[in-house]
Length: 501
Image 1 (tube, rainbow, N blue to C red):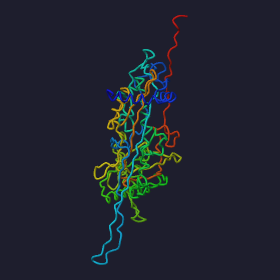
Image 2: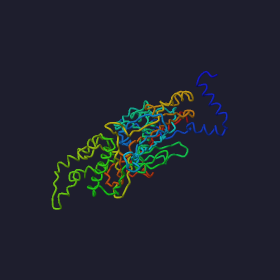
Image 3: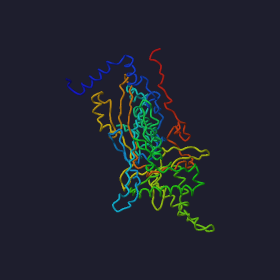
Image 4: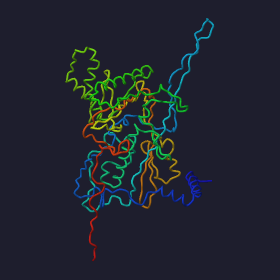
C-alpha cells in the first residue's frame, strides 16, 4: 500500500520505463530536454544586443504586435471542460401532409415534423517554445560601461493587452525585455504568439492539422460564415443554417462606389429582416475589414449613401449634397483611429460598429490594389445573449495542476490566464533550459444564418501601411512587413593581453 498519490504515480511511471528499450529511452530523453546549445543572442554581456556603452536609455519600439485591433479583442472568452459538444439549430418544420377532410368526421391533414441540425466545434492545439536559454549566463555585463536601465518607449501590447492567443508570463514587462537576458527571450516569444495565431480567427480549419495531433486548428470565420452547412452526425444538408456569402468580383470601391454601398446596405437589411422573422432581434452585429478598406469606404460612403436611389428623381434632375455634411459624416464614421474606437458605417440611421482587423487576408491584385472580405459578425441576439465567443479548454477546471503535482517535479508545469495556458519547463540539460506553452481554443459561432461575408472587395491600399506579419497567408514573404537591424551586438568581449608573456 502506497503512502500517497505521488508514490503511486511514481511507481506507475517506473513500471512504464522498465518496459522501454534503451533506444526508446534515448529518444524520449532527447525530446524531453533542451539541446546544450543556447539559441539566439543575449541582450547583455559580450556581444549582447544592448551591450554597446554608447546606447542611450530610451529604446523606441517600431514592432507591430498584430493585430493591433481586431475581432479577437471584442469577443468574450470562456473556459470549458468539454472536448466535443454539439450545438443545435432548429432549421424548420416539414410541410403538412394529407388532403383536406371531405366529411365533418374525416381526418384532416397531418402537421409536419420539427427538424434539427447539429454542429460541432473542434478544439485547436497551439504551442510555442522559447529558444534554449542558459540560466548560468544570467544578465552579466561586459564591463561597467554597459547599461541595464533602458526604457522601452512604445510597448506594442500596452493598449489592448496580450489577447486570447498570447500567454502572460508572471514577472515579465516591456522594460524587462531590454534590461535582462531572460526578459528579451520571453518578449520575443510573446510576439510570436501574438502574430503566429492571429489569422486563425479567420483562416483556421482542421484540414491543416498535423497527422500526429501535435498541432490543430479550430474553425475560423472563413469556414463558419459560409454556405453548405450540414448536420455533424448524419451529414444531412442544412441550408437554413447557411450564412449569406456575396461576391463583389474584385471591383475597386473607388470606381464602384455606388455598387459596394448598395451591396453592404442590402446585406445588412437582409440580415435584419431574417433576425426579426426568426425572433432573434435585436441583434448586435459588427463589421470586420482591413484598415485600408475601411478608409476607402469612408471616403466614398457619404456621397453614395446620401444619394442612394436619387436616380429615381428623373434623368434630367440634379441632386446636391453639402460638402460639409460629407466631411462631417466621413470623420464621424472614422471615429478615434488613434485608439481604435468609434469606427462605424451609417446604415438606415444606425451606426453599425466596424472593427479594423490586421489579421484579415489581403490579396494583391497589382498596381497597389488589394482584395479582401467584409465580415458581418453577430455578437449578441435578443438584446444581449452572446452567440459568438472564444472558448478554451480550462486546464484548471479539468485538474491539470493537481495531475502535474502527482507526476512531475514542483514548478515543472504552471497554468496562467485562468487556466487558458499551460506552461511547461523542459528538464534542464545541465544549465540549459527551455519554456513551452500550450492552449486549446475554439471559436463558437452559434447562429451562422445571421452572419454574412462579402468576398473579393477591391480597394487601393494606403501607402505606408505596414504589416505585422512576416509572411502572407500563402506562406510567402509579406511585401509590407519591415524590420531590419541586427539580432546581436556589434561588440565582443575585449581581448586583453595575458598577465604574463
